[in-house]
Amino acid sequence: MTTTGATVRLTQFASGGGCACKVPPGELERVLAGLGGSAGGSGDDLLVGLENGDDGAVVRIDGDRAVVVTADFFTPVVDDAYDWGRIAAANALSDVYAMGGDPIVAVNLLAWPRDRIPFELAAEVLRGGAAVAAEAGCHLAGGHSIDDPEPKYGLAVTGLADPSRLLRNDAGVAGVPLTLTKPLGLGVLNNRHKATGEVFADAVATMTALNRDASLAARSAGLSCATDVTGFGLLGHLYKLCRASGVSAVVDPAAVPYLEAARPSLAEGFVPGGSRRNLDWVRPHVTASASVSDDELLLLADAQTSGGLLVAGELPGYPVIGELVPRGEHAITVR
Image 1 (cartoon, rainbow, N blue to C red):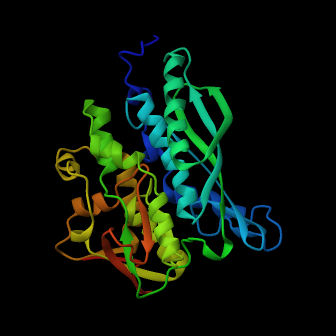
Image 2: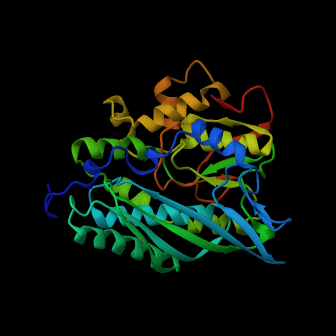
């Protein structure tokens, strides 16, 4: 039955929501393991490929220019079509910022159940994506759309970067602090929004905020290691960074920032399945002190949508949540 734009709740048309609907990290790595590092790349021009599951592919164009390529799309994470477009666009652009690049051009990726949701709402989604692309100074030109049982939206983005100033997840070194540039709890709050319809303005503001300034600050400080915190949660993305860099990490949970309603929402049971899968995947590589509860670990593994950057290095104005240390028995210690 077709729903009118006045009554539609977009989140009810999707089995998952936002980056929490990602393929579980363990399954994804098993599939990608047989593809090799370059998957068809040539020579040394492919600077970042499949090897470490970084945020985007990077190919050298010439001495001081490289192209950064990424794509990201997902099902509705909020009911407001315009906000969903903004969130999905900011999330896709984040991968370029996380690699130390600047987005130049993007194209839309849209899937829409035309017989179930008015196509006019798709226009609102696209309008939201265009607004964030304009804020980023990124051209948005065309794209691709399909008729699909579940609504999905995102961008394929191309950016430019200096090959000598990339932010990579394999460049971490022991003795460097860890900085997180956005609060956690987005997965829990998006799950609550889907279940109840409650709107969390601070969550929307966090998800629509570009990671541009944090990326520029990291590059200006001469830092070289970063990743963005999205569907695999803080612990998942930190584990990948530690594994790629050959180091371990210590996290101080008391220093990690959270959105205001995250803890109460977790206590009330609003936890995405993706967050639980994240914790199951990373738990063998984590040791936690006796004072750290499973609920705390679940929040640290919460599947984020359009989260912040996790940077190896200190950025003024953002909280330091831990440090990289020499490689030990466990990749991550939470204490």
